Length: 287
Image (cartoon, rainbow, N blue to C red; front, side, top):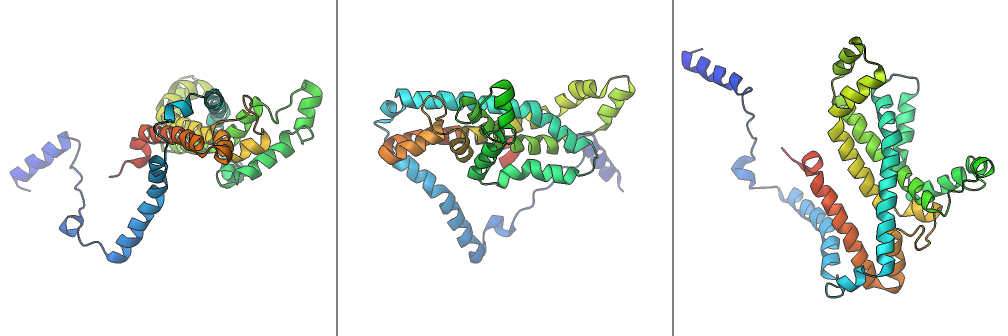
């Protein structure tokens, strides 16, 4: 190696190593095969045209009036409160669950992981029926809650929180578990060798390391809870002021006032865009 090459290598080492070169398509990306380009464009249109149509058909002139109604604000307030409460529940029990799946070897861990992620693919209405069978007044667990503590969850605001947490918590668990698997466990081991308990090591060492993953999972869970419909209407019903969230209000308005349904849909669309923008570095960044 010549002195010049050695100097260049030393300079790259001081800068943190050689820079990665971008791989470019020949001709700057031109000459895309037509059999790939056409389906790709159809896919873009399929996913974006409905959203554009929602914006085109929106009653912009009447939007302030549509969104200032008492029923709309009632549904929006209930949605925000219930989604936040469901996210809090997911954090309290979902983060420890993710730690258990990521850090502890035990028989049947794969089965537990499959059951935890099942609500991701389970039809929401089926989830609502399952919640009724478990926590209803005559459910497997619900009858004991009613008999011993006088607690009835179906068709109550607490039932909305339970239904939303049921469908939203898997998003948090998956995000946190993935972050935990990427984190170096030697930091926890070092803390325990210095006399810290496992819980102290988790609280003081692991939790700060995985905070970005927890935050991302919490935002995803909150957004999922805010948009939940099937499990909520099945388990908690659609009672204005008590269980009627924004998605349920959209469904009800669509039958009598389509313009109001479009206005409410735009609110949920704006929330979704805000969530996507907040997570762009984690989920949508390329390269």
